Image 1 (cartoon, each protein chain N blue to C red):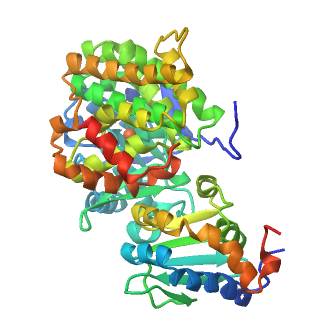
Image 2: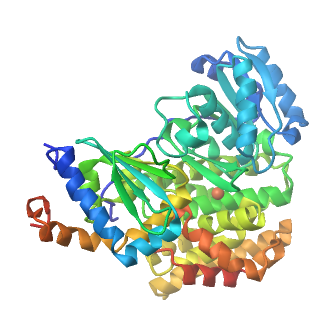
Image 3: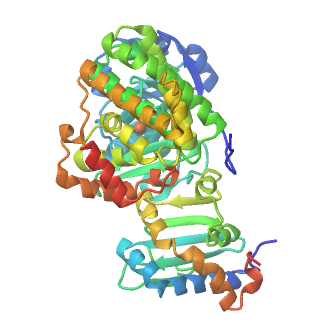
Length: 138
Length: 392
Ligand SMILES: [Fe+2]
């Protein structure tokens, strides 16, 4: 069974997490500097989240087809969930096509240092916001 | 040995080797069902004797060469790819034959994708594993012994408008047939032999030291290093030495299969940046930077560097692991000096058009190179800058 019951739950959890990150200066400042629009395409359940860092602040929107992304990432929601724990072997996930990336690779690379602090934030975020049952540390 | 959590090995390219083989490809072409072949090459290759013999050879089989696209520059870009694809489609080609070095082969991969897939190459397929189905057959005859591109899943194509190098990593880009004919490499001058050969050496070393190294890539990388160690100087000294040429061509191919699996690291990251920002040819940059990249990774892979030391005939009696690892780096410096004496190779970035003021920008670009995630030590700005200063 998929980790997240439906797209609404997924939006609440990952969308909420991205909104938290967008208010976390040590992450958001680097994202804004990279001037990217990243679109995450999730399956099982289907949802897209667009993280728009092209302006002065980070904006998050769901199933948004109006913004033209610089970089797109495709993955199952479960892989995304594990990724935010720092539990995905990135090079293996890319090689196995569990994650695929569309767009200029240097821009994708610029994201990695920016999101480093996020791995530690995710489990705590789940606990603090009533999503304990999704926390795989428990 | 310690195995990583996951590895895979998938090398679908059929590889055939033989002096003079480029002239006689009937059996291989029949296998591929290639009938209307579109040739992609460059103006230099087109002037060589073997080139016409290769084309004539194909036309004697049931297949025919339906057209030739030879306007491929040294650092090929999207415009070239589009021009090639338009011509290939007009000619109703069903397969592509690339005859040339890295730029020609990567262009051919781009042309093949553009011709075989519905969609726009840059907006729909740039990135990792974005291609929805296999492409038309792609046959490659490498004319240099270095890039290994005849067996890899990678193509790098310049976006002229945005002045950025676009990387395409896709299982469907892997060529179907690689024809290793040492006769087609005989006319390479010593400088090109040395620089492309050291690019292959860098592929082997970085594939061996990288985080995704597996017993499969190790076996190929180590064999490649042995063959390059024994033949690169000989091939530079006597270009007509067919055995040395054959060894270099096969070694480059083995290193290509190795790094198509475990990728390359910070050495290539720095080399790509020196190429992009200062126009340093890829092989020359790798030749200069390889020992510095090994030193960068010394703390993370002492044991593996120790294996390389033994490969360079260092006995290591009474040496600590670290001392042995340092000897491996010294051995590559020594090879560098030998190629400087024998083939006129530069050994410092300052000799190839890089200015000291460029180094910070090169370091910054290295950090966003796709190779970073495969390097055994984290790629950080200050340390990359330090390595570049040492190589300057
Ligand atoms: Fe290379």
